[in-house]
Length: 348
Image (cartoon, rainbow, N blue to C red):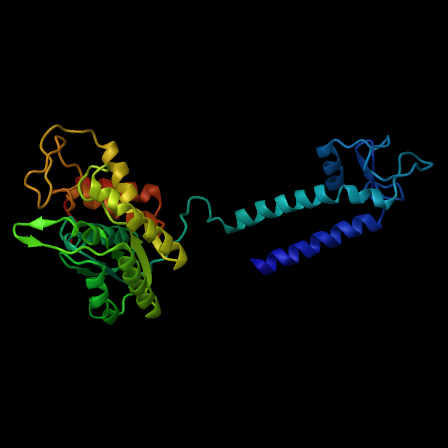
């Protein structure tokens, strides 16, 4: 692209200099050279576009009267140079956009090939995603509908945090030689600061340590020529105003930031989940929250079975977000969603 642009700019300068050297002049909205012949439709169009009438002296336009009319010296043309450059650059932009766009009716290619292996690194949400209605199964099903035979490598383990995933990355992902790794990590890093299960207590991962662990996971995977997609962490309880969800914000902000820095694909599932919850009508009833018997919220869960782990609609939400991040068109995602809601569960 840089070579094309450089060549184009050289061409523009040549054209401009050529016009100037041939004493292009304008009078009464027509463009002439010194021989008095019309120079062509392009320059006439430019003159009309700016509605230039150079029959009278105007400040900033250097010209002299010619015996055969309002003929100007070639220096006058330099006044038009910025305008002509603008027109030509617009034409280039239009041409490049048309060149770079896919043919009409054909979606842009997604960066996944048939035969690719795709590792899903995560916690219990990821482990559940490998089930019959799980998001991993749905993603693979959507690829099959596109004629892509993609092989999933489930690598989700209950309760795992960023330090745990870093510790098993070699064995559970890199040793399998996948082309892709989808990283879902952060829920337990935040939740374990407060989670209590009977007498069992847990330890969360401070933000700075989380950043180091996630960075190391991405760098090790990329060093092994594995492409990475980052999934922002989903909600802990379906109330966005809950303290744990507030605590999650800087962790997800970091994931968005490092996805840009490391040139990873990003599926912003936290945003998708919050938007999906808003769209589903509230139903009165007691909400469920994993590990909290006394949890009080009088709106039934919409996307989760227990405030954290996904139900069927939650898995569909995650699958849609991942497919969108891979570049699948909205129409194809909608078609896939319809089949997931109405057809028998896809075969694993």
